[in-house]
Structures are given as structure tokens and as C-alpha cells.
Length: 236
Image (cartoon, rainbow, N blue to C red):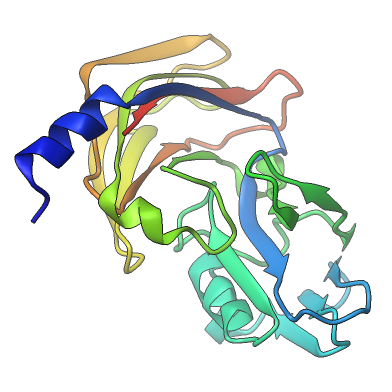
């Protein structure tokens, strides 16, 4: 159990952060090559064969059939790709139960350097195909997570979204995801169509140490260049 002094110090050192993702830019899976080879790693999506193929820097190839019942959700795909020795894979702006087939952009995924300084491959969602927006609020967004996050937490203070959708009761949700990947809904509200809509959570909501929050916008979300979600949170 953390000591009282440690908890006080953690609170005093808290950082306020903002995170924003726009339409078609939510990162469903973040992959990082850890094979340590000399080849150029690649990640390729194929709508034609409904699969994702990853090739690590040792040249080892892993293919996942997204149309198969065993891999038709985000969580199943992430677990399978994590089983490949040369990769780390993390679910970020998605629920593990979200569909995986025909909802991710077709073609090669370009490597980029994340805010944490990692070179990663970010598989993003096709917002219109998935008909939803997601935003993960976590202590870090590293491909494999960090051991440090187990003794830290986030506190979501407020969030805002804009989406072209069919307004519905319960269209806005917040889920808590623990280190084991279990997701539990802890908040819901009615969705609002094509309006900048903010939810102020007052003193904030926390998933607890080593866990994260996923803000979910559903209700038949339509593709819109103006769509986004942003969140203001404390990282302590």
C-alpha cells in the first residue's frame, strides 16, 4: 500500500494535461517493433483479404485475419499481435469489444514518433465505418505501457466533443479499463448532434492506479472533418 507521504507528494507533483483527437485520428492500436533487427519493420492493412500483416525488424511476419471469429474485436487482435515476439501492441482509443474488420484504413501504416518519443505504428479508426469516437485518457500512451503507470493515476476533469450523429440517450459513455483489460462503464449521458458539447466532471473522475478511462461517443457517428474529442485531466 502506498504511504500517506507518497500520496501527498504524488498529488503535489500532478500535471494538468490536454488530449485531443480529431475525426479518423483516434489511435486504436499502437505497435512498436522490439525485435532489435536491422530490417525495416512494416504494418500493412488489407481490406481485400481483411487482415493486418506485421513484419518485424528481423523479417518475421505475423498475419491476423480480421474476418475470423477469433480476431474480429480489437482486444482479440491486440492479444494476438502481442503474442508475436518482435512486437508490443496496446489498445488506446478503442474499446476491446469494438469491431476490427473493415473499420481501419486500408494500406501501409506509416511509422511516426509519438509524444513519448517512441517510434510506433498507429492503426487509426475509420470513424464513419466504426460509427463511433473513442479517446483513451491514461498516465502514458506508450506502446507497451510503463511499469511506472501502475503506481500512478489520471483524474479526468472535463471533456468536450463535436460529432455528426443521431442524438440518443446514453450515447456518451465513460469506461474504466484496468491493467487486465477489463472495461466497466461508469458514466453515461445523452449525445448531442453537431454541437460543441462539454461535460464538466467537477472534482474529477479517476479509474484508480494503473488503470485508464475511455470516453466513448456512439449513436451512429457520421464522418465529419470537424469531429473531435478532447479531454482535460490531471496526471499524478
